[in-house]
Length: 418
Image 1 (tube, rainbow, N blue to C red):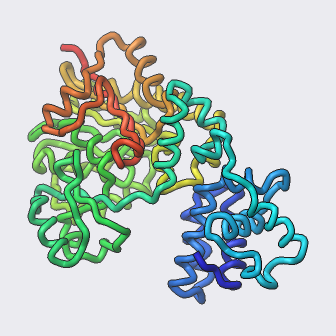
Image 2 (cartoon, rainbow, N blue to C red):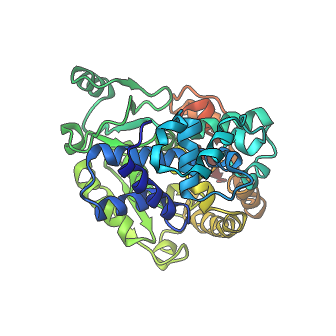
């Protein structure tokens, strides 16, 4: 990657904001570009790529900088020298003599051999993956460093996957069917799709294949009462509604008015008429209690660390901490217990996260089952077979980017006994 002096200075300033880890990196970048509209498309591309590469490779870059405590400028210089092969002479007047001497020494350093650097994961995350081998942790970390592909979900109310694939390929897109989700299409690169006629007509939505699988294993059927307990902007809500063929009643609960507002245009495009977006104050809101024992399916995509999405959000591994995970665990347990009250006898409760940490996943499920003997774990393999999904994972769904090429999702299927 070649960086000119303007791009260098701009990248340093963006990184200074990102490395405070006070706000999501993509929000920092968007805000910066809004403030600096004079930057051209090529400048924006270089600044974004450089910044996010440094976030992905931060453990290694810090190790190369040691014993110097690196700032944004140091990290960019080392990335240029070690990752992008910039010759010391090419830096020109951008660096002083002391920096040239230091960079020459850094150039000679070998790849750091710590597990943190090889996996590009902080020590606190590695400690929480202690049930995995060193090789598995490295494979996971390296997979999380790769940019995510663009996955689409076909809205079965309006289109069929084969038709969508044919149309996209005819237009020159590199499109293929996703290997597991029968609704998914994967596009090579990152083409802009939100102005495409398929998107505008509501025939496709952007949704990671792993997220699609969470909706599919909920198994919503026509005429049922279904609750998406933490609906957010509604990607899985729309999938559930299509599974129900726009019949029955589908409640989309969320505590964020802004997130539910973002659902409205998607809902309008989808053609669904059975969705009821509902703002709740908290998981024990009276609107929740009114549905006690009435829902055949309840999906809980719980608030979590988001560490399964590091391909898209590499800064999350530094914006989360052991303390924030402990706080999330309390919230996750409370939300799951509240959502369970809605499930009718014989009904299905799906607990899901986009996390890789056992503390947010099986730990929450095991504690819930111990406190709720009226629920039992249903092996997810049987549910996947029911949906004709060619995937064998055992009792619970743990999607690994290194194995499944999806984001890192977890899901457990819990059935309320009759």
